Image 1 (tube, helix red, strand yellow):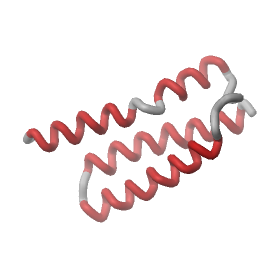
Image 2 (cartoon, one colour):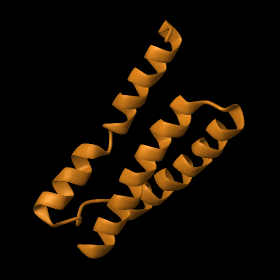
Image 3 (cartoon, one colour):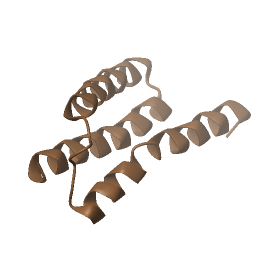
Length: 84
């Protein structure tokens, strides 16, 4: 694995961590009052598009990173609807 792949996977790990604190906080507090539903709907839509792009480019860094962020986005949408 070369520098480019290491950089890509490292950036992917950090990207996937961006939504994790919000998911954990919402889960623990059982409240999504201050969370924007539209932000996560837009993010989920964006992740689907990035996954499609990654598939077309055959780029596993893009596919895996955005698949994890999509899971987190959909989780937040579910939590927002559950704790509304």
